[in-house]
Image (cartoon, rainbow, N blue to C red):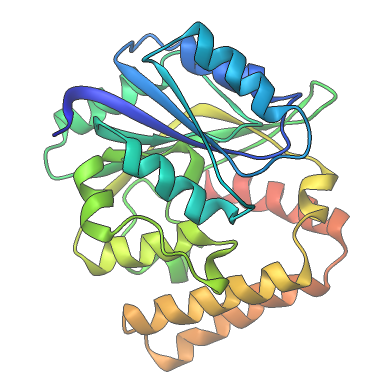
Length: 273
């Protein structure tokens, strides 16, 4: 049984001790107060768990802390959070990002006023460790089953808020070798296949930390398994064969210098606007 109006915030955390306080504080500062934050530590090797433990002790009943027995990656970790969630809604948040105080209030209001919509994302503002800001990353206002081919990401994963019943019906995140990364794209393919509708708000209510190191963490293997997920999704949604050239083009980014990848990302974000 889910609590009416409550938001269960799912946060998988791993080696983010320096940024985690800002992320948690941005949840605590929400104007929408009916939330629970469920964090699951994926066997961090720094002080992340201790930081999270301090907050959980300070906010009993509001902040819930879990810990994996072994490093199991994000899809498994988020599913553990989902199993504990009691809210009517589920929201995503990452341990190295921040969100604006009005984020949850605006997203809940949007879903309440759009009965046919099951999930809503937002634009997100990139920021860097030196305090500067990058481009705003937008997604299409009304994505559909063809958006993954035409425009790339249907939603900015960490920005979404949805009815928990949707996550339950989809079985949460698939835990597979190919979803070690790209578990969100896998989810969107299944979301559209099931006939759900989601929208994106143009407001940049989420601040995503971005730097060269973030791009450096995306290895050739990461690109390869993301490519596999795209092929899975194209088959699931029965895309025409000639469309398969787009996943090949996106996979080819693995051979592009990482600094150029950052520049291209900012260009694409501005183009989407």
